Image 1 (cartoon, rainbow, N blue to C red):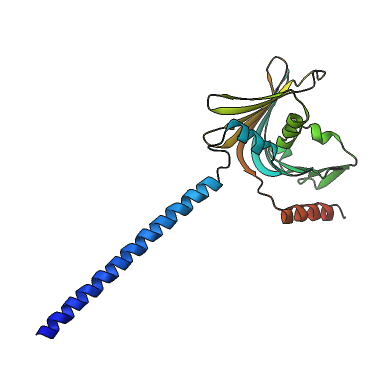
Image 2: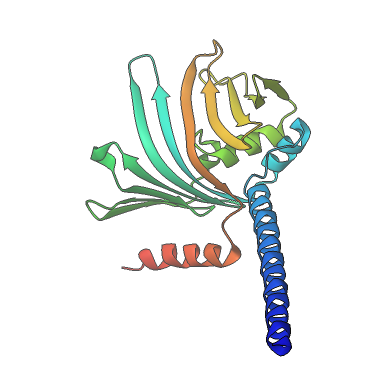
Length: 235
């Protein structure tokens, strides 16, 4: 009888030890899971909890980006809207694909630092412009804004309504575009929009960033991108 009682005590002790071990494992799992979640959130939000100057430095050191954007271009006669995908790799590789409007859907524009290639996927037609220097002044590109911001002293950094604004004044001889403004949501840590305005602060180009991945492209992707563009021209 005594041995049976001792066996029950031992069994209860073993079950208690197992319960304690299981509880410890659960606590550790919860701890590491929450730690990794917080770590991932911090990694995925590179601009949050930073000063305005740190945000400015981060923007100016962008080496690549991928973006889905909505573009509105205005003039005295009409307004035209586009949806596009953009890819940029420093120092001068750019690719843009039009998603809307439907009449130019699939139109691909690629610049490799020297030549501009325009490919119409619907008609399977390709046009190449050698020694094309004008793409660097293109208003649709974030890297073009960064270049303008860096090469002139006519820029400023300020904050309005929770948004950090980087503004650059363009060449006064330009009869149309007078300034570019990049808006960053400080709390969310996201680039929101890029606006090109005339001297009367009327919007000429309005770019909304629906999605943007910064410094996401790697060297291997750069090489693959260059090889793909090279092979597409060999026909």
